Amino acid sequence: MEIKEYKDYKESEIRQLYTEVGWTAYTENMPVLEQGYKNSLLVLAAYDNDELLGIIRVVGDGFSIIFVQDILVFPSKQRKGVGTALLKAVLDRYHDVRQIELTTDNTPKTLAFYKSLGFSEFSEIGCCGFMRC
Image (tube, rainbow, N blue to C red):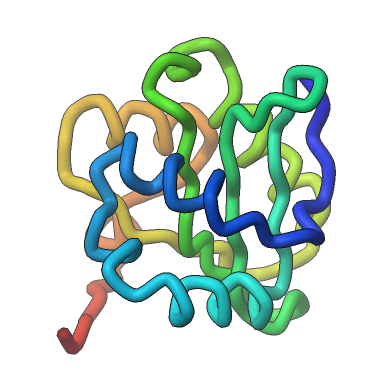
């Protein structure tokens, strides 16, 4: 597996990835998703030869805060270290950033995954989060 910057946005593979993981709200407006990619701080991709395995997308200033906006791995490639490798690559790159945040589904599987990589729920550090939808 190789982790490298995802520089050339390929709509068909991004649409397939988001669709297979069930994030179809994003694929309903592909031009907006493309602009999101183009305006991200960093997008990394995991590849096996030329086969895309997964993506991680980061927004923020890169100095005081980053937000892991998306981390997606094709379902057939999950539980094989792809997501871990992608997230560790981001954590290595931004190791001096004070706030590294993300929002995720509240399931035992996702909570265990992020806690295993050193993340804490906001409530565990005396904080709360807000979102306007």
